Length: 311
Image (cartoon, rainbow, N blue to C red):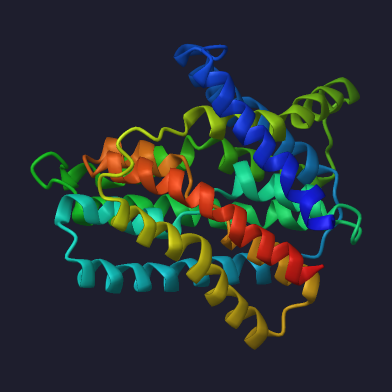
């Protein structure tokens, strides 16, 4: 029952987002603007609110972040081996690799953790939130690197590579929000109460908006094309990656609660941002979109297993 109550709100809201789009209640413009509102306003407000007010152990945060990054790196290695075996061509390789490794932690992982693990330990929400900051930076760097390495060299000017990295990192609202939250937490200089309450109100709607946004962006059009590839990448993302993380967590002797936070993040579907970046870098955006859809469906299984085994 705990697993059901933890995951059903997440997937019901994703299904609702899809249903509202299919019935045209969400027009394409409205769905796009809700996604922008979530990414640029609501989720950053949630991160600032949670991080700035919380007490947490830096050692707990650093362990989870390190293992999250290591697990992702190893899953990238697995993805390259699988891609070579499947003889995936250059243009599709970047989309395949990042789709196999870049998890949707902020939009899916945080809601699942807050629904499934709320109240288990003081400061748990803060640990889970702060641990995302290094991972978000890493995801952006590795995605750009992979897509640059396998993109269309005629259209990508490598003299502008530094600008591309800087723009993706320094304009990412989630990274900026984590930095602001950590700065406020470290200095103790909290914003005025009216600002804090506004951040809390915005943060309270972030998780619901994030899940609706995912549902509204899912497209099953043409998904049969290249299903073998999208299924392989999605399986690495939601099944292989958590297994790698579990092995590392056991070797590291990570506490059970921290281990479950790690595994929930690793069992999440591919990030919606992977489609956006694949499009920017002229990779196979159709494959990127299909990986997101397939991994979202498969994550219902992977997240159920992680929560059930951790209960």
